Length: 165
Ligand code: ADP
Image 1: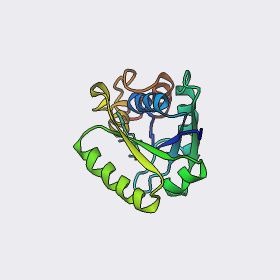
Image 2: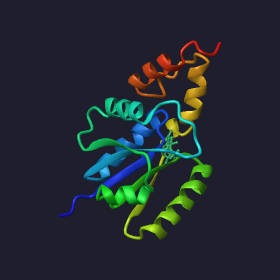
Image 3: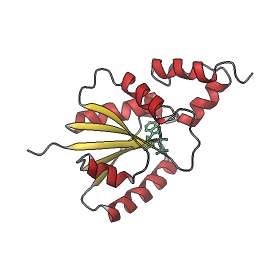
Image 4: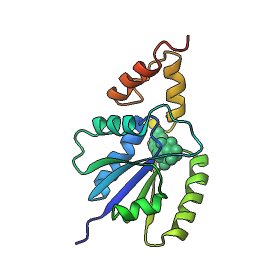
């Protein structure tokens, strides 16, 4: 039988426990999940693509069918094809996410009718977590250790700790 491969694309600046929960749940649905660190042209990142990739790899322990790759200049559907992925996984936290993700899914379906988008609703305990809130809290010295993997919390501390008082 053909392997069912999903890509989970995102900016992951940084990777949070919400992202990790989505990956974990996707890993139980698909044979393989590839977390794809994409360049979001409208966001100025805190972490470089290689830093993000290393942090995500460090957070994926215990998930043998999940891997991470960085991709700087490709449409998500083209990158999915390149990886032989038949599915694109995205997370949904709220109605704003729904509206945005639904539009992207519709465009991607036009570009690549053979690739299905699968939207996974966030667990309520993660629904308020966003990378931008994490960066804001960490920049002001707040404790983000319950919201991001331990290696990400350390990296945020190194990058931002004490820079804004
Ligand atoms: P992008 O800039 O491509 O939206 P993000 O890193 O912000 O990248 O998000 C990647 C995906 O993860 C998106 O589908 C987003 O809705 C989802 N996501 C973000 N935060 C959470 C969370 N706390 N719980 C579940 N899914 C999330």
